[in-house]
Length: 211
Image (tube, rainbow, N blue to C red; front, side, top):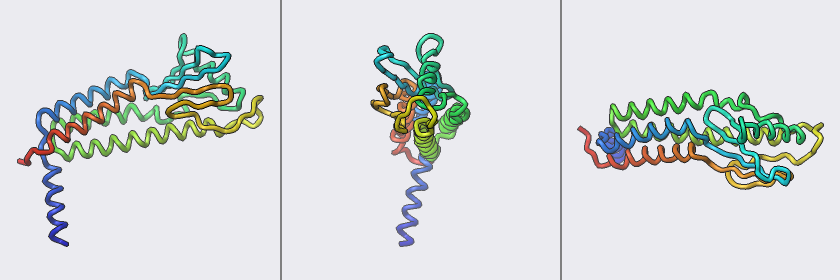
């Protein structure tokens, strides 16, 4: 048993110290660029349609802000006015604490990518992938919880009473007389591509031999 464990640890040590080849480093550089570019595009879009709003109302979620569609983002004000009638508190950026630290985390991940390019070891890629995956899952879970809070903490004295609800994270949902469409946008797709590039970087160097 001890010998088997020793062999396993030896193989793991050898694997973690595999150097990254030039192709892997280029993939990591591309991943850093994709993350940087994603900050300029929305991660998510919510589109609300009702008989009185046939063209729909749009809400765009960026890593650092909430932005309404229409001229000067007026759709956000329209949505908050409608939310008032069902007792939902206004959607405001200050309630999404994630938007304060998310840009810094993305910057930290970009620094880790650049560090991995410089030091070029498989262990760097694995650590990076683990941190990135945890951050992504935590962010999605945290955002879903914010939506849950908005839809369940309704004012009982509101003019219109509806059953508590959770806005749809992905897909289509009927909320009162509104139909909600919620889907990822370009920023989210760019982040997914960056994760794929990190995985490919590790795959391309899997057969390299430690010095």
